[in-house]
Length: 116
Image (cartoon, rainbow, N blue to C red; front, side, top):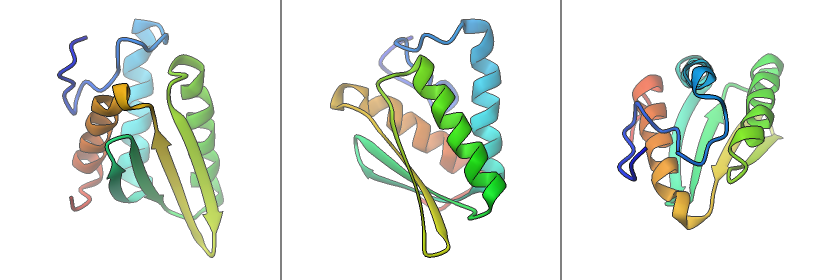
């Protein structure tokens, strides 16, 4: 992969998920973005905040996906917060992975149709 990540190709070269499995994982994120993300906010170059539908099955699916993603992309940090009837997932990484987060945010915007 190049450093110029596109919204449709945000998987970084540091990812250890087998290449054959990457489209499946990408599809899982796309499904989450399309069906369960209410808003996307790139709060910093190193952080993206996703507002999720605050339903138990959505939160459980997001948590499962985040846990599995840290197995292959250990540079990501996922912070899932459920409070006051709202659910948010913040994905962050070190500055050298900011382009990955930017591409992830762009893909989420495209799939969720969330305003930028």
